[in-house]
Image (tube, helix red, strand yellow):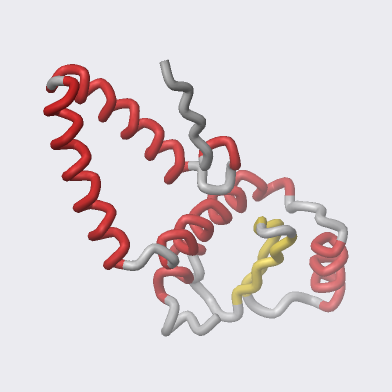
Length: 137
């Protein structure tokens, strides 16, 4: 990764020195190091990574970094034009909603949608937040 060309990624990962190496297994950051490790440290790093064994001392930090990178990856796939089109469609649908069910009921629906979207953006890696099943009354 060229940190000069990919500043948003290197910033999200907190890269402060080169080289910085992240060990990733099944899409999750398990360990990292900065600078040149000793031969023994490098062997240990590689063996732990190959076995999927996380660095327990930094597990929470790496989970947060993995989530940040997942969000960046997801946002990079959603073009500006697609976001603009989505915003326009939402405005039209909200206008239609307020006309058909009234402002108070529409506001309740909007609050529910806001919560659902918040769950999606904050938990991109969790499947349960990426699906909505509607049950008509």
